[in-house]
Length: 335
Image (cartoon, rainbow, N blue to C red; front, side, top):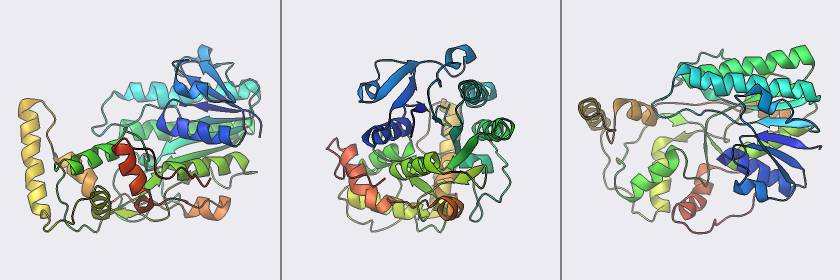
């Protein structure tokens, strides 16, 4: 494989991918805002300082590269904070600038990190690529617009390009809701969840890396976008129980009824509205916690040979070790 350009290399996903590419002996060019970022110290890494929102600053960044993995994005927050134009400037315009740079430099292969948020927020049943996108948030809309750009450029310029629709990704990082969930459980601030039937699809960071590597090697793609997730969805109650056990806490002797959680969340709504400060639990947060978000990665499994190597339950010791500041327990990365 020739040199790979990775945008968003300073983030959790980008750093994990770059580290793996380097271990496999590939030369990598990373796009950063700060040339002093630790990722730039890895062997085989070339650093370019640029802002993808500025077409001029990225017009030459793909020269000499054979593939681009475009991960840079303005990500969604729990409350989807940020104006529509902020998401579009990074996720839509920035993607267009990267695609223009690819065409200008003769790069033929593009892997774009999209999101399952293009389908909306919650799901009533398992969702796959046959369902039409219907994003409900500024973030989801920006990712769907960017996907369409990738597909348009692929047709117009003969690119081998694909978008990967990703659910929440977890791993050894302090970013995201999972680390806060572990911290809250550890300090007794997380509600003891009732047995819930709703399931959520997640993606271990190493499974994400495996999917990207497959896309960098695949001769072609049978579709413009693939959902990528762990092998099975998870019940939120199981996630809670696994993390609680990983922290060395005894199984709960009782569970908070759902009606009580909903009442507490409504109180949180009022508290937050009056005080202007974040409440411990709101209706929006509870909906995200107990709602269903189930996605199928059968297409990428059947068409590209994707196989998830990690499950959440297997990853719990690693997650807890990272949370406690200990060395990672499992340094094997079967990609």
